[in-house]
Image (spheres, helix red, strand yellow):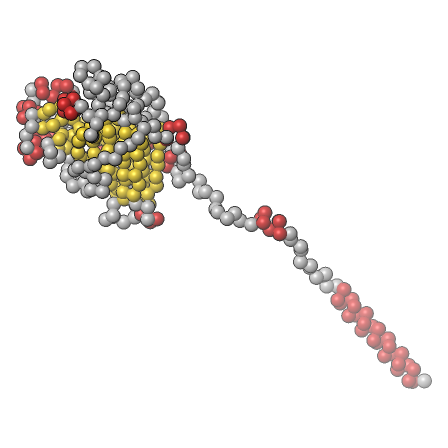
Length: 363
């Protein structure tokens, strides 16, 4: 009788153990199955091949990397003939200092410092630098090196006095309104009849007396009582223009420094063609600027230079022939202590149909 009892105990014990382990395993959470993801959903959630463009916080759209000009404004109307540069080819260096007046005057809401430059051929140029900040005007002019040249083209461009460009200026105002921005105006104004060293001495003496040529009226140069001006023996550029009866070209090179969010504007009044090359200074460290070309206040070309990226040179040019317009070359600082070299050319046309024997159609 004991044996069946033992068997029964063994069976009961086995059942209890089985029930125990079943309860243990059934208390575990169910194993999580991997979710099925379609390839299409993966494609939708994947990052794009190219990152989204970085927001541009510059004051004007033409300073942003993805800017493109308005085709109606940017299209070059006329041809731009190749120019044989004489004293100031685009890759030359600026080595001479212009002569500015000691005094910076406040005129029409701007600090203005006029000056003169005479090259080895006795050609006299005016340089007028103005801005809202007197210290910026002084620093630019005190450290300015330049080259300048005026010469004549092989022929005159066809043009009529009534074909003046009527576009209205707009976006330059925002750049020139920045506190440290500068306006630089350069023009060939006269031919000196004395040797260059003697003419320089006269210009230094004039600057010490805060006299420059201009702002004295161009038509009154030879009638000025100032003996220094009389000794320069000036023949006005317009008179030389009439003698040669062909297009006049002005070349210049300037080598300045610029800081972040500062704008330097080089203005040419009433020209048919303009060309500019901007190059980062090789001797300096890092630097970045925007090179800009404006036609009567509208941006027509823009390039970003950055030494870190190996982009150190840009050439911009535009022709409005036979129309006349105002061209502005601009350099906008994108990094502090950047240094650049700007070389520009302006072409002013001669037209035989102008009353009084021909000349420029410009006012």
